Length: 479
Ligand code: NDP
Image 1 (cartoon, rainbow, N blue to C red):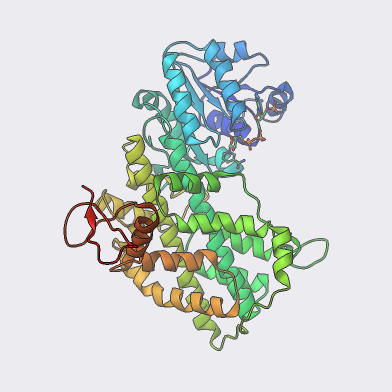
Image 2 (image 1 turned 60 degrees about the vertical axis):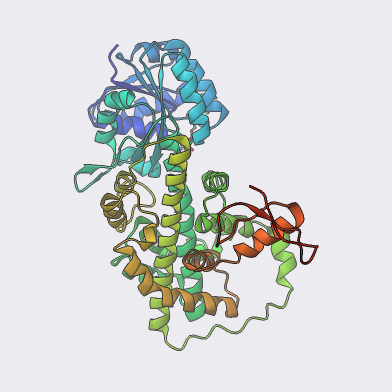
């Protein structure tokens, strides 16, 4: 046995992760179902200049080449293919060996697989990996779950190959079994919301001021110097600057306006519904992708009178600043909600998740890397039990400063018919949670009326039911 670690699956992510491991000094065994991919990797990078690869065309040889306790990374399509590969590896591994799934697996699948591996005497680590192709090669953000014992063996390797932020690795043990994939799922959900708020800002600038994509790119580049500093703002400017070589116009103008999805946003929302956590920003962002693809509905609605007023902006600089602040406030709401989902998931699944550490490992390498994650880390360090991120210093003050802009932008967009699902829902969410009293009392009354679902009173303890239709009858107390 001569390899420190192995990678099964040499697609886009697997090949780059294997090269990252080898470059960092780990002899890396490589295997792919279709041997051509292994041969291609060896032909391109197997001359020793990028580190040591141990190629195998047979799975038995791949497993045999790993030094014990063995560590084999699965980097294949998520879903049933991961189960197939896990079983193939488990058959050949021995007690104490570690199978690591770095694909985008659903956390509940990871919980199931970890249980199964444990029964076989193996460790199973579900590790979220973010950063795409470039990240996998040069340093991703890594979110490993699984046992502490497995992290002792795996952690040093992952911390070395991960991105680093001011010298600190963007990798930390997240929690038991599916915790890593859970946190990666929420990361992707936040990514959906972050992308959507940027898109809403772009749409407002375009429709409000008639700016060209290249001019809006300049605005985004300026924003990237301030509190919005992030990878997504940076690449947005680049996307907007790109010209189409065919037509000569902005490339964004020839791209079909239908946003696809691979499912991690949907999982975040489905899971949030199960946990009863309002992740309105992520939810609206996911639905917005769906709405963009709802072709028959879009066609049918196009003929309706929108009763919208023209969007006329008298002070462009003030408008641009309002849009920037509305974007920041909505983004903050989405992150705050995402962390609420992590808190709720950790409670239900009994994971001990350090949210400050999560914010820290998202500061570099991953898609949502952003300047303000440093402040999120500090906020959770100061108070790990923080009930509401957006109400914590330094965010509370920044959020309050942005609120007038958010209100102006939401009102303006509503009257002029510009769709802003995440901006609008972020404001509504805030107005709900800050309200002294919500109309939820009325909902309770309705529920008790038609279904005897009972309610509680503000002035005395107990559970009550009213015989609503019979006027004058006293309420009945149920327990
Ligand atoms: P690719 O489509 O590039 O590669 C898929 C790989 O899976 C191939 O090596 C393929 O082998 C292998 N595979 C599929 N089914 C089986 C099977 N039944 N048995 C053995 N091998 C199988 O995928 P990616 O590299 O893009 O993605 C891999 C994982 O990483 C996915 O879970 C993805 O969600 C996740 N991910 C991807 C990111 C990205 O930016 N692309 C970012 C973060 C995570 P073969 O060559 O034989 O077909």
